[in-house]
Amino acid sequence: MHQFWSFVRKEFFHIWRDKQTLLILFGMPIAQIMIFGFALTNEVKNARIAVLDPSRDIATQTITAQLEASRYFDIEQEIRSPQEVEAAFRQGIIRLALVFPASFRQDLLQQHHAQVQLIADASDPNTATTLIQYAQAVIRDYAATLQAGKKEPYRIQLETRMLYNPQLKGAYNFVPGVMSMILMLVCTLMTSIAIVREKEKGTMEILLASPMQPLKIILAKAIPYLVLSMVNVASILLLSVFVLQLPIAGSLGLLIGESMLFTITALSLGLLVSSVTASQQVAMLISLMGMFLPTLMFSGFMFPIENMPRPLQVMSNIVPAKWYFIIVKSVMIKGLGLEAIWKETLILLGMTLFFLALSLKKFNIRLSS
Amino acid sequence: MPELLPYMIEAQALTKKFGDFIAVDQISFAVPAGEIFGFLGANGAGKTTAMRMLCGLSVPSSGQGRVAGFDVYTQSEQIKRSIGYMSQKFSLYEDLTVSENMRFYGGIYGMSLAAIREKMRRVLQQLHLEQARNTLVRSLPLGWKQKLAFSVALFHEPRIVFLDEPTGGVDPVTRREFWEMIYEAAHAGTTVFVTTHYMDEAEYCHRVSIMVDGRIEALDRPAALKARFGAASMEEVFLQLARGAQRNDG
Image (cartoon, rainbow over all chains, first blue to last red; front, side, top):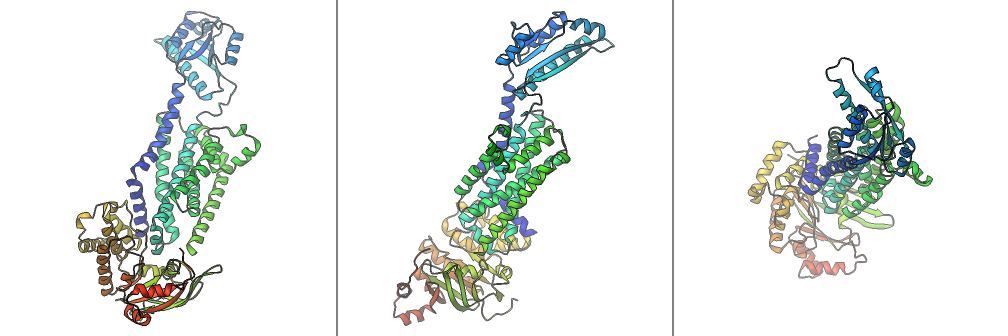
């Protein structure tokens, strides 16, 4: 065991001494999450909206004024009929419409209950969700001020409609996407480079001439990257929960377990790459072109797989990241449990075993020659 | 006390084939304990392949081989425990400090922490490198690196050390100092198996074997070889033998 940990320690030294790589490793996930997250919040400033207000009473006027006052909304004053709203949505002029009933104030004062309809253009689901949330906040604030000092609550019921994309597919795609990209990058690229570097420098010969078994050498080289990957998963999750306010709907344990499975998939791919290459450049090229790009394109993160031509859809099935992406989305966003993702998990597990067996076999062949 | 063996390295018709190509063709020799055994040959003569078989890195195609008393077919793990190995490429980690390298090699050879600490103290003292223990190996001069690499190959006190062109690219003064270290190790009872390109170094060996096209064409003390071939230097001996070679590449 002492032998094994001496090796792991040495591997950590390699990583620690290479400050540039270290910075990229830990900076990249943070930067990516922040860029995506910032782009998300930036987009909703000064969104153009329409207000249909047949009631024109003090309550609706106050709400409208508060919406106008916020920096998130610009109200298109000329749009005054349901037909105009519909046309404006279709032409992409407005992103959100508020529809008050004719009897808004009356309902509110007499029945303590009124309705508002919120209609959003959900073809861009991120923006739609955010705009709806802002509008809701403004309306709730108003209800709260009416409330002050009174016993019976004023309830304003919000009826939300997402146009074009009612299930909000594609929302928060980027957190699972960034996770699969980072894991692929850290594990596949870094592991293959770390092993090939030993070959290139000639130290692999020394290691193989030592009494440490080849399998242990490989394991000891992989462990630091497994740890780094888990640190990255943790930092991405923390950022998405606390900075982007994207809660983890499902089980955290399940999410971490699945991430470890995918990490091992990526590690075995890295091992495979290292066993077929002899130089760091080639290892990097294969990892980037052969592993990273397909992950980017076929995981469903950047481009929806449903929209791809049939042959590409079929091809996407052999990209491990596609299955991990589905799993993370299901657990993290939809809050589903293992019963919903066992199929994807099995596929990923099968791929992992296959790559692991293949790469260990290749590694052993190389040794015996 | 390690058991007394008549020979630390024994090869009997040891052969390695890659498909139709016979890289090493029935070589036989025996190296007693404490000997400095020079293993010479042009590029492609099969030196490295032969050495890899003796180190347990490669399984022979046929023939017998025993290293430190262990069989090369079945006991490669015990062999690896008994040998030290230094390759032609520089074998320390440049991004680790002197002491980290030593701790690492001690560790993978299964030495205890206490043993590593004690040995490190002695080696650093011997090399006058106490000041440099926390220096990255990258920033040491090449000569020091080479001597350090040799000390690290001997760190776990192996009974045999294999040196694969250890002095490539090193200046004459350092080479001289390096050979003094080899003599010291041999004097202390370590068997040294060394390949080299430098014919002046061949003169330093107790006995020398010269490989041509996968076979051992000559094996004797340098003085005896020179007498037999009527040559003034080992260089001449080598050239006479290597002239007939068919193979001449990596």
